[in-house]
Image 1 (tube, rainbow, N blue to C red):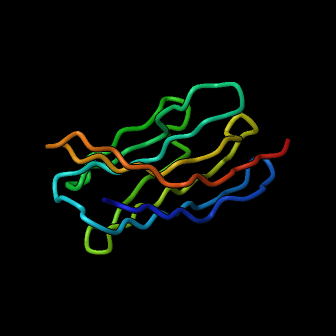
Image 2: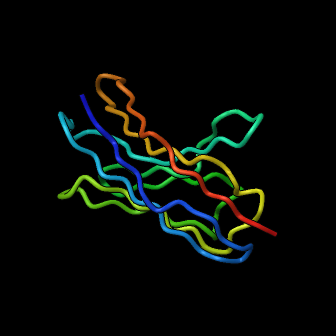
Length: 117
């Protein structure tokens, strides 16, 4: 089992910045991808950004150029730096870890991000 604990959500004005952090613990296999998803009210959960253990990244088009994902493999942490936030970024953000060889997926409890206009 893997446990994911997120921190860093909150309320910010449009144009502001927030930093989300996620710490993973438990039985973490080395071949994994960590990432952030978000779910706004009435919408499906969507990928925001992901990063492999080797550092390869993937971003949703809507956040490219504004958000940056990074990870520390030694500490099993992943960080999402969010700049130039927009009201449409308002959502619950979930940390995610996927073991690529087994397909197991783990989720954090979610952290609310609210961007006021």
